[in-house]
Length: 250
Ligand SMILES: Nc1ncnc2c1ncn2[C@@H]1O[C@H](COP(=O)(O)OP(=O)(O)OP(=O)(O)O)[C@@H](O)[C@H]1O
Ligand SMILES: [Mg+2]
Image 1 (cartoon, protein in one colour):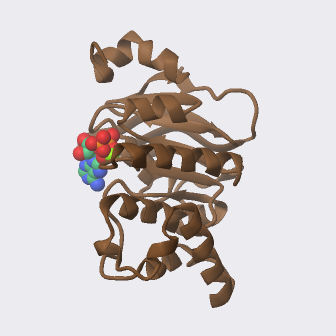
Image 2 (cartoon, protein in one colour; image 1 turned 30 degrees about the vertical axis):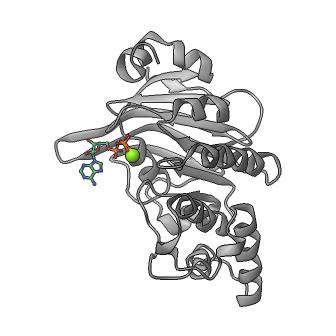
């Protein structure tokens, strides 16, 4: 029997990963990994460097295929489906490392997020203005992305994802390099995305204070396997998690 991270009762299951495995040559990066993401929750995915968090994002967003296992998004079996198919179903991810077009304007970067809208330019520009407003970029629309301060570049990656109109937003270490006040503003944004815009969020983050504040539930990966699952408080007290990741005295 595999360990499966069970979701709290409540919302409909929007994403289900069943016994995912991914090998890279001789390395098994993800093994027997099952979890569910339910509508309206903010689920944290944590674990040490190299545990397989970004690989999990690559798998669920269709950037790479699982070696075995099954993925269900919005009730549809999408195992082996393309990134385009999965983003059209409403699962959109950001990248851990800078994925902006640094030489292009903020507007042009956000427009990329609207690529699969079937609407015309004016409707797409409305979306650009809307998500710029949500992410604090309204006054920077004409700036060159690479010239923005780091914090606004991180916000721009989120704006691009939001422009694709996701139902599930997967954020890969969105807080890296943010200053104190910026972290608070980003966490407020995540909560607003959930409550005001009805998004469901999967959050990979090493900032444990932020995880404790933002997440309803946390799953922990270690060497590609599910190590623990529970409330942020329960997980942060879990002996196995302390041993593998958090360390003593954190
Ligand atoms: N395309 C790839 N080819 C070969 N190995 C890979 C590839 N992608 C990831 N890996 C390996 O898979 C393992 C998991 O990497 P992953 O990037 O998913 O970790 P992570 O949990 O996101 O770590 P971090 O917290 O440092 O971002 C690592 O050993 C990594 O070297
Ligand atoms: Mg990573």
